[in-house]
Amino acid sequence: MDVEQLWEKAKEKTEVIRGRAKELSTFASTEVPYIFLAESVVNEGHTVIRKGKVIIERPMIVLPDNMPQFEGFEFEKEMAIDQDVVQMFFLMRGIKFPSLKYNNTVEELDLEEGALSKTTGKYKKQLEKEENVSKTLILGPEDCWQFSILLYMASLIGRCARNDIINLMDRMSQED
Image (cartoon, rainbow, N blue to C red):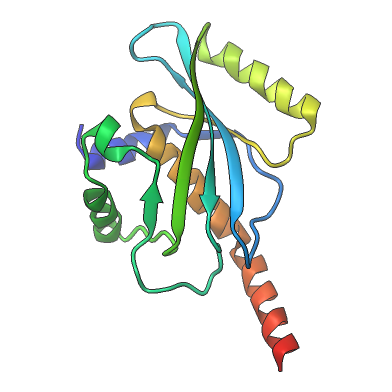
């Protein structure tokens, strides 16, 4: 599949089961932990579990002009697509990620026997029991998990934009 098909697939099939309740920090880096679940394309009836985090550096609405940097998403290794192609794809499609650094780290990659729905229920209950308001539970296709994670990060940044503007205005008024 080419980058366009993978993007469309991720847009169509990504589902946020439990989103992050905490806002992003306006003036500092924010760590966004996640659990990403997907049906295994290799072992039918099994679920691929990716646990990781994305560090979004200074997610302010006032942004530099340079292109965003995506680290740790392994576009080249897993999709055979150069990161520059991904950035150009976003640019050509009019998809604008704030020009920040998005550093993804997959801390655990596992395969669990059982259907996706069963595994989803298990992790949803676990996060609720822990009262974890920082970690996100996302479902999506295994072959374009990177785009599913980026779609969530973009929605999170968009959700926090109003708060970022208020915080920025408050800081500017304090400096006067």
